[in-house]
Each structure stands twice: as structure tokens, then as C-alpha cells.
Image 1 (spheres, rainbow, N blue to C red):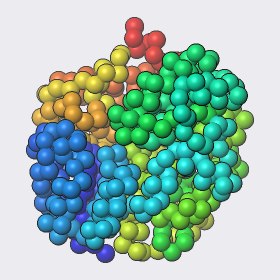
Image 2: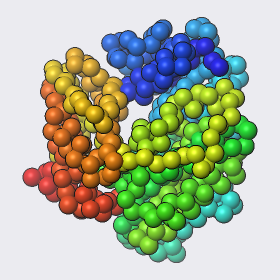
Image 3: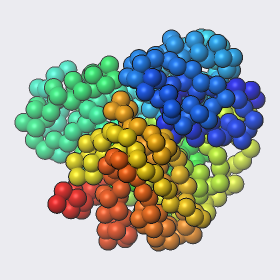
Length: 450
């Protein structure tokens, strides 16, 4: 087992990894930018190193500096968290070449799954259902419109690289495809350094349901049930829950088995997630694979009793999984909401000085925080500042606990999306489990703007 791990990340996920490392008796090394001098993860780690200026490309994306710090500190392994460098093939390769263990899959696997186009090809070859579309990059807007017409509208124009909804747009006509192509290609190039675009059929009124995986280096792979992540704004998830209220046991098992099959087909090892779109008839289609820990991993931890970060570390250290599929039990229901520093009416970021932070307390409430009571939320990073996770014996009980917790959540000095979250969980469609990816646009957007 490792004695020291560097966390190549910031915010709540860095705090989350440090907490598990402390539980396992592993020393931790934090990195920070000039804007994060007083951040919680810097305070919690055993050692902390400044890696650059406030902007991510000056600090948290500075691969050479991070590797230098890891070696200087004597860390044996690097945990990338999520986002930032977590799915960066160059970073994973640099760790491997520097004698550092990258706590995640191999750089080769990251590369295979990092391109959505290549991932579609791989999954199709493995026999996993995929959304109808193409598996090669489009040359220009004219080709995009021709392909879209052959697939049938509506279609989804998508960037091959990255995530978070960047470079994605629904189009209902050839004219809309042509208009969307250049702008989305530029955004993909700016954010990911890769402007490759492709098209697939847009599944109307789908659910976004993903399967959590654990796979070791001894050819064992397990699924840890599913998470329903359909409530999204701008293709970014804001509410996640486990299990899904939509799936029956037969579909749940089929999706889990397909995810394990996909992981084995690419030689996957560590924690990972297969994301699916599920239509109204419970047909499911491969969407993408996240070769890292997910933001929403706590809901899977809550229903299974497993510490996913601990298992990431154990797998990276060469340990085999100690359980079989039949040992993975489901207990109760868990819901996570993401607290963003943003205007709830416009979804625009709301940086500023936090003047008051009081968290709801009680049984069945869990917090993952990126801030403290006197934190300054800067414009340099993702505006998610916290996650609130609640549990209950069933979904109804979890919703009631979540409502009370959000009502008791007090944060002043900045705007947050808490009012929007309160509107979401109070809506009859949410309570009834009618949660598609169109939920916010159909039920919530008009209400929060008025």
C-alpha cells in the first residue's frame, strides 16, 4: 500500500480524497494555485505546494510542475480526482514515465475512451447498444447537414473530446446543423484542444442513467448499480440519485452486465462509469465512458456502503476486489444535489466573498465542501462549491430529508442555485419520478425566471 499520495485537484474532491487517505493512514500532498492559498484542501493535507497562478492553465493543468512536486514530496501515487487532468492521457503517461502510480486506468485506456468517436466504435465492436449515428469526425458543416438528413431529425451535434455539455447542440433541421457547427467546433477546440465533431440521433425524452463500475488488475469487474442523472441544465447534472425509480430489476441487471462487458472489452481497471441514454420503452444506448471518479459517486457509496476512493487506491496498489457481484447489496435511497455559486435565474456564475455559511445537520445528511465560512469564490474555477447528499429508507423519505436540508442551508454573500433546487424537488413530476433530461426546460426554467 502507498504511504504518500499527491492529489492533483482542488475543491471538494481534493478534500474527499484526503479524508479517505487519512482513514487509510496514507500521508497526503495538496497542490494549490495563488487563488486557493486558504482553500480547505490546503489546510487538510499533510503537505501543500504552490503550483502557479490563479488560472487553471497556470496551476492545476501545469503537468510538468505537478510531476515535479510529486517527485519532490516523495509521493508514490497521484489521485487526479475528476475534471482537470483526470482524463488527460498526457498526464497519465507522464505519471507512468516518472515512476508514479496514476490512480485510475492506464493511459492507453483513457485514450481509447477519451474520444467519444473512438468509444462508439469500441462499444459497437463489443456488442453494446449505441445511439444511431456516425463514428468518424465530420469534415465541415455541409457534410454535417447531409449526415443529419440521412439519420433523421432531431439530431445531436457533439464534440468528440471533453464533456460537461461543451460543444453539444440539438438540431431540428439542416439549417440548424449548419448554424451550430462552427460555433460548437470552436468551443470544443478552445476547451479541449480538439475540434472533432460527430452526429448521432437525438433520443427524445430520454433518461440519463449510468452504471458505476469497479474493476481490478486481476480480471475482476463489478457493477455497483445505477445512478439516475437526468435532471440537468446545459447538459450539466444538478440532481443525481440512486437507485433509479424508472428501472425494473431486469433492465437494471441488463445494463449492469453490459457495463461490465464493456469494461472487460477494453481491459479497464479502477473505478469508472458507463453512461447510458434510456428511452421511454427502457431501451438503453451507450453514451460515453468516464474513466475516473464521478462527481455523483457519493450516492453509490450511500446505497452500497463502499468507499469508492478507498477502492480506487487499493486497485491502483494492485489489490484484487474482495467481493463478488452477488455481494453488492442495495440499501435505501440516496439523492445528491450540487450547490453552485450561480444566479438561479440565469445560471451565470456568482463569484464573491462568502459572509455566512451554516449547514443543515442531522441523520442521513452528508456534505462535501469546497468552501468554508470566509471563503472567497473566485471566477477562475467551476462554480460548484458543495454537494449535499441525503439518504432515506425509500425515495419519498430521502426527498423529505432533502427538502428540510435545503430549507436549512444558509449561505450569504453570493448567489446560489438553492432556490432552483428547491423548485425542482417540490415539483410533482420530480416526486413522481418523471425525470427526463428535459425536466428543467419543461418544468422549471419559466418558474425560476419569473
